Length: 228
Image (cartoon, rainbow, N blue to C red; front, side):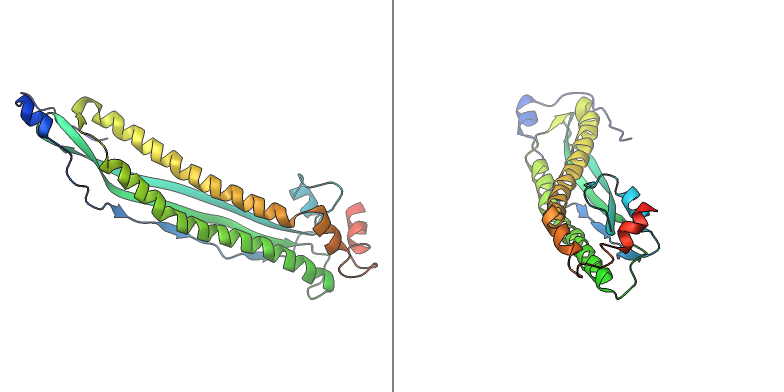
């Protein structure tokens, strides 16, 4: 909670009108990105993978899966600066966005022996998904400086405001920038989902299912495991 001191008395009108917000000193900016190296899980059956990916196209069964999740937090401190005439300026003192990758798992059906043609095909496909996820992480790192610059620019254009509305304005701004930060991440994530969709197509699945010949595990072992 930010306390504000109400100042009694009044200054001459011309002095009150002359008061302007001071130049903004650069805020303390810290950006924490906590990555997570992808982990390989080969202990899940093809049946388990298809239950986990329940929303996939039923015309195909899942032989590999990449699961990715991240969490985000936006912390900011805004300080009121008294002008001495009953008005305050709001200055950003600290900006601290944090993005944490909480899950990055690559599943390959346990029925596929390591080193087999089918295993290698699935591993290579999931590797493309991993690369897309990691590229999004670079996009976030690239986008954050522009976002923070926009936040500080907003404050440089703000006018002094009465003491009675300083505290509510601070809370509104904190909420606004928190929402803007999450909206930025959501936009970048939509691009990631779009890129995943480009390699998860019926044409690509058909190509992969025939990559190891007509009698591979894609046509024999895995369909049998799905029926059990």
